[in-house]
Image 1: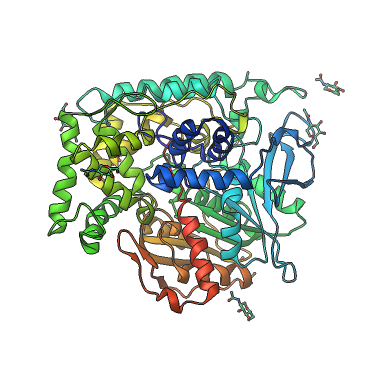
Image 2 (image 1 turned 90 degrees about the vertical axis):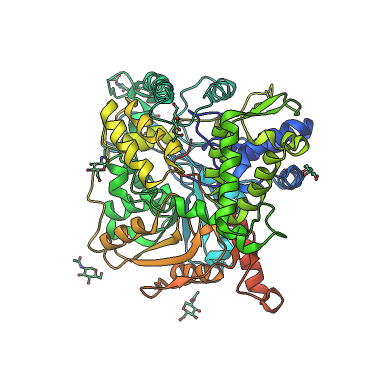
Length: 615
Ligand SMILES: *[C@@H]1O[C@H](CO)[C@@H](O)[C@H](O)[C@H]1NC(C)=O
Ligand SMILES: *[C@@H]1O[C@H](CO)[C@@H](O)[C@H](O)[C@H]1NC(C)=O
Ligand SMILES: *[C@@H]1O[C@H](CO)[C@@H](O)[C@H](O)[C@H]1NC(C)=O
Ligand SMILES: *[C@@H]1O[C@H](CO)[C@@H](O)[C@H](O)[C@H]1NC(C)=O
Ligand SMILES: *[C@@H]1O[C@H](CO)[C@@H](O)[C@H](O)[C@H]1NC(C)=O
Ligand SMILES: *[C@@H]1O[C@H](CO)[C@@H](O)[C@H](O)[C@H]1NC(C)=O
Ligand SMILES: *[C@@H]1O[C@H](CO)[C@@H](O)[C@H](O)[C@H]1NC(C)=O
């Protein structure tokens, strides 16, 4: 999901970092903490920005400072909520609003509690040719749209052509929207839980699965208590009594998008959704086919696989993406890839032996700014999996990390420790909208068909998954456990069809040739279900088209947003940057200023690759 950020398995641990939900948190932590504790910041930011920024602490600090000077603190809850969209200035040139909508769309108007959605908008720059508002969803599920627009609204606006307002909203349960899908009492409680994830990947024979399942059961019970309600839906009851988690399904979010569109005074939705955002786009286009204005879904997961809670159609190209780490390293040569060997196989063997060396002997890093730390195979493998969502951005620093592990370079490793399972207590209360939450569980498990854990069922599913992707299965296997232990059922969910013979305007699908977690086969399946839809293939590796900047893709997107023009069937766009190798296809000096700016915007977006399915 989501977006850029990414996070790691909350439930799992140790790993890494971040949680999905955190994209947004990062900015705030960054800005606040920076003022006082530079070290702390690095940790927090590192946690959160793992993917995006790679491993260089200095780069992180620079980025943080910039953020701080541009983004004064803003208290979302100081805005009065309203049943109309009433914009107030926020974050310098942005507009923010809190919109009241019904918790339950099935109850009569005015009956029962409400939700309040956080909306943040970057106004169009080309007001002369103003064309309305593009809503964005950063994936997850659980990513914050307000956070994405704050960090990348300008890049999105440049890609779409400047004639659109760009609006990020926090879907129910996430970010600054209330009620929140939070099942822990505090951020530190959450972080401490994350640190207890253990040091094992999922493996059918070593006891790791009962442990991982027990952790999911703990979350499931907490969330049932906090978000499940009391079984009554009284007229004046509170959201807690009704059970806020029963009303966070994607069907409700799709309906929220329709409500937002209407309150903006626009007839049809304009939308760009990434990763899980492709699910939201499929739901909307199936539920409200005559309200489709422009709908782009980028990094497409098969809606039926999602609805069936199967989580297994989507890893078919994962190992190919991982393989490309070795391939691009070899192609780039020793000057650009520190793992370079004389053949692709040799690079792969070298990386595999670095990883497996940690099984027998985890690497000790006694001195870091947050204390001692031990690097396990699980942590490094999980890190590598996450990194493979965004190869252009992450592969070079990942190669350096492998070399540092191989050489036991303590200087490098102590600098990098913040990327792993460390936690620095901040001693200040985290604002509610920056606190980790369980929206991934609430939304994805609630949307899917319910099921109970069975040892045989898991065994078969996991064995099949391992055959599809050996690299991802030991991490992705948590998807089954997560929902098997989930107990909050939505009052209302949409169960299909996830298809539309006709939509009022065509849907545009965008897919990398090799997506880490949303493969082209899924995009083709969805393409066939939406009459008149277009499919743009980008010949790149990584999650969503964002993972690899491509001017060609950007120009097709603009033509679609501005004019409704679909790329011709069979169009394939080449990327302008390759992992390790760098810029290709263009003589940068010969590029027009406009193209250079566009490429910069695309590079910015590459920092935002969603962390689909990872907690
Ligand atoms: C929910 O919002 C409606 C307006 O849309 C309002 O009439 C109602 O009082 C609100 N309910 C609660 C419990 O605040
Ligand atoms: C699972 O754990 C066993 C030891 O219990 C080990 O022999 C095996 O290699 C592990 N499987 C994988 C895929 O790592
Ligand atoms: C709910 O509140 C309204 C307005 O305060 C009141 O008129 C109504 O009787 C209440 N309903 C119940 C069931 O308490
Ligand atoms: C160890 O890492 C540091 C910091 O990244 C680097 O400057 C140094 O050259 C590395 N040392 C070796 C022996 O690779
Ligand atoms: C696993 O794969 C087999 C063979 O393709 C299939 O028959 C079975 O239904 C699959 N099981 C699960 C749980 O996906
Ligand atoms: C599909 O949409 C087109 C254009 O709006 C319309 O002419 C046609 O009748 C629609 N077909 C169906 C099956 O709704
Ligand atoms: C949209 O169409 C207009 C009129 O045909 C054209 O001038 C413009 O270049 C098109 N925009 C894009 C981005 O293709």
